[in-house]
Image 1: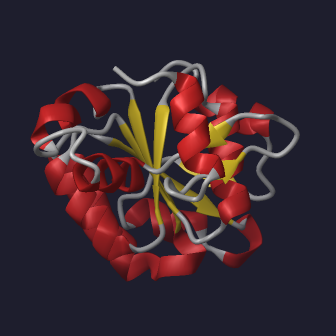
Image 2 (image 1 turned 180 degrees about the vertical axis):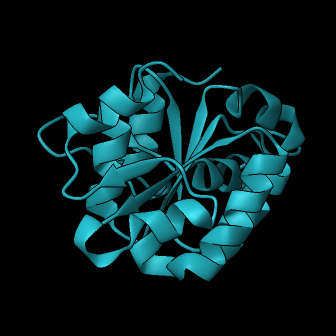
Length: 169
């Protein structure tokens, strides 16, 4: 077991990468950074020792390059989901094949419809709910519906919009 104070010291000393939540003393640590740290410092022997406890059926995978969007999702869903963020579709595919998620969220404007279709297919085959973030005026929602996309989050996003979509998943 490790105390919260010890983890804070690791973060403050730069040993453990993290993001401070604006307006709070809370910190967010990416799962991959935590695992790398734990393995490197021989706190765990292998990642399988920990992964089944970390990735549960209350996990959300967010695919975005924007740290502010990641922070908004983490803050909005803190009582509902553990939010894991990746910044590219390759890492998303790797994570989705390795861990179980309840929901995946992707910003379609960053990655394009063609990359998102492969994510959509994986989600449909594994009973994972997929939401895509779009700017409504830039995309034809009917065409996206025809491509198989059914769940949309419209920009600009705020906490209330996010929580209302995810509350009953």
